[in-house]
Image 1 (tube, rainbow, N blue to C red):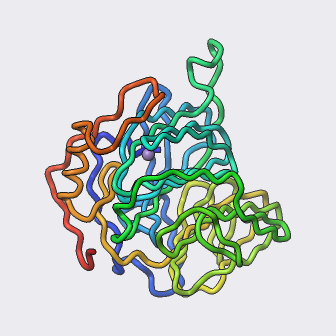
Image 2 (cartoon, rainbow, N blue to C red):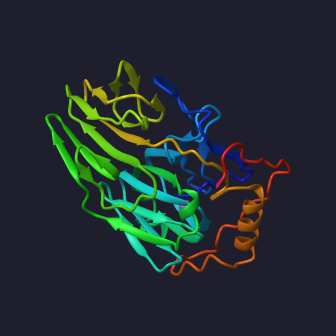
Image 3 (cartoon, rainbow, N blue to C red):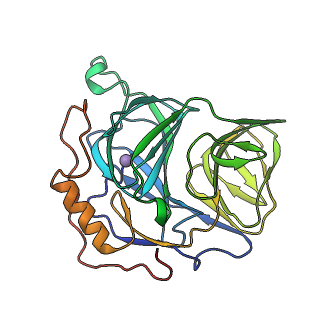
Length: 327
Ligand code: MN
């Protein structure tokens, strides 16, 4: 999906300043963002927020649904990041400027590496034109996540991966599906550029699970469905529970059926500048990406989408500079 805000603000993210040097429990409720359009979809955005901008290289987290809604995101660009699309319910068609056309369904991973620049569109199915008169759209429920690329890899050639089969850790009362990185001896086939982990943890009623953790990673849990308790904190769908660093395990329990995403990684030392759908290292990068996209250069065309691409909105008048270490 895309950041469809009409007046997005520039955000400086990354660096050590926000990384907790110890285990913490910090609940971020996030904010509701409306993604435009006639049947507009509401999402809960928990990254970046004022207090928490990144967890490892994870730099953007939107949760949507479950609701009957139509997602129709026209071609738009990305730079310097990977988009991770994960569905709990629904079907979404992805098309991009490197020629990919891929349906994503629950339990399968779409991973798009923007690198130096890519454009894509996303539409939930069935489309309005394919539904009977008066027929409601289908139920959509999922998460859209972005992973920042580190300096040496931020200009890699854009590419797209679809992983219908992912490693699964079957535990008593729980199923853990590994999206990115390593967990419990399993390794995801998805290409990652920093030490990272992303996993969906599905718990049956009454389950208690001890997830392995690395003390040098920071972690967070994003609630998808049902309620869980993690290390003594209660997490419902929508908010993000930041767990800090210094943990060798994370214990989660659920009274009823529940589902959460585990996000973690080595703290992202570099500072990045995020604006709209771009990740760069400076305001000037953002200005250049925006200009290239709006002039139709450098990102390639998305074929098959019935409609015009999304123009980049106006840039804010304030300019931000990354602080600290910049590669
Ligand atoms: Mn997008």
